[in-house]
Length: 332
Image (tube, rainbow, N blue to C red; front, side):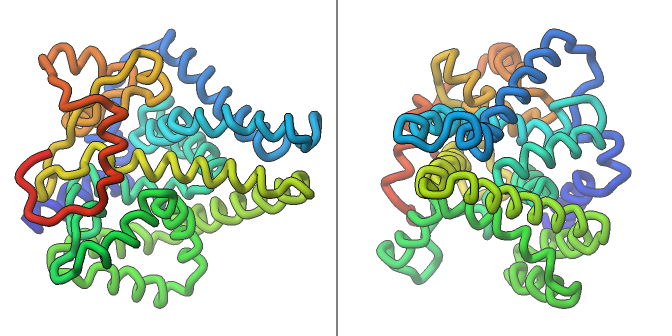
């Protein structure tokens, strides 16, 4: 299993395979109308972020009424995250380099480094439910109460906040960064992932990109705080709202699923308008089964496979509030 995981992760992260966009790339087919839709959505996501940080305080002010304009921007977070996710899979636009550049911009506007999130996400695809990818499971020899505090912190925004903060580790000297990665992978079951992480984050060009992303996100936040002077809490609450949504959705479709490495996810039912907001990530099992498909292709793939829903999307998200679960799990 270790060899299989190591080979799979390397396949996803090495430059030669990034260039061929396999197995995470998109089939090379023309989707002119779909490309226009994606362009409009990317424009809307960027405009929303610009309004959140700059446009509202510069053009409309920071009155009580203007603060409420931040609410729809927060509500659109799943779409912004979904576009970022498409870029991670090289499915947003043609070409790996163009996806990386656009993905980095979308990530910076959310506070994330594209390279950091991409490694974690593709590892999740190849080895989900590994020792560091089961936040819903109570660790051995720990009580429910002891596990509940970190669980709820991560669920209610902490996961996204920690993901954003991980990019700061790129500023460590190389030996110190290697030490952090080695300590994180001390579990024998994580040996393959740890080895791949050391190689991935040992790439100097990638480390420079991560540093740049973190610096840009930090500068963006600093400028926004100045512009929102006197109403900083409204801005911070909007950022926390985005972190909350991203954290709530991150593991929802894996909550309570089997602990087998690479275990399947589930599909959930959602109204059509919600599917657009989520970029069809409610069809999570289909996405895991066929990650090379773009978000607009998931619905047809679901129908062609005679897929079944394992619950309503809202119920699946809310059920995480039950708290951490005891292992072993036998099903969703």
